[in-house]
Length: 247
Ligand code: PGA
Image 1 (tube, rainbow, N blue to C red):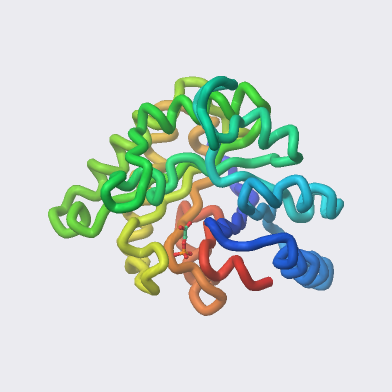
Image 2 (cartoon, rainbow, N blue to C red):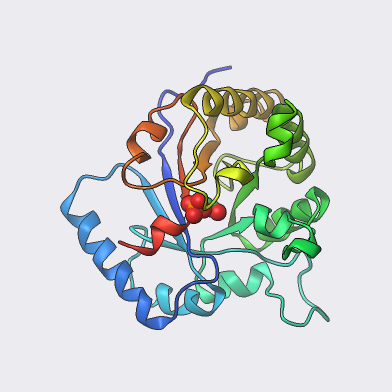
């Protein structure tokens, strides 16, 4: 099996529940900035569902691809307030984040209690609609402390991915829950260990496709640490929350 020499990195922004139409200005600035520099990465911004159509209309083409932050696992039906993968695609999205820890989090702590099985249904729905998925995995602080990180991440990965995954339609994002929005980041060794583990699991299960899949790091990525994080082995880009709100 051949491991591809160069995987084109992906930098994806996750605006979460932030932003109205006026904030799309930031993406004009981003677009202008990208045009000035030689930036060898794919760029996507996962905006609130209400902005996808407007972002798509800004005609950034492949320079800034638009994405959603979640989709329902069903094609359509009685799911008030939910958005299907096909609807995101219809609005112009190319990507969708699935299984973000803020959605996996328990309902009592403000999340949606999404299981990996549910995440898997969403990946399947996205594939059916022709959307690419950014599948998030990551451990809680308690799991990190008890030494269960690799076990937790391995199980999330196994259960969240369907058997039909290609490097073109699936990107993994490792986001330690305790690093999200906290300003904390794991050490280079810790990130390298988890990304190496994910790469091995992907390659074992999907062969060459697994070897070529992008594995993003996410959790308090900002201008001051991005270069160092992106230089770690098996880190093929970043999923950026708070810092992506500024061009
Ligand atoms: P953060 O969020 O960059 O604000 O830590 C990352 C994420 O939740 O995707």
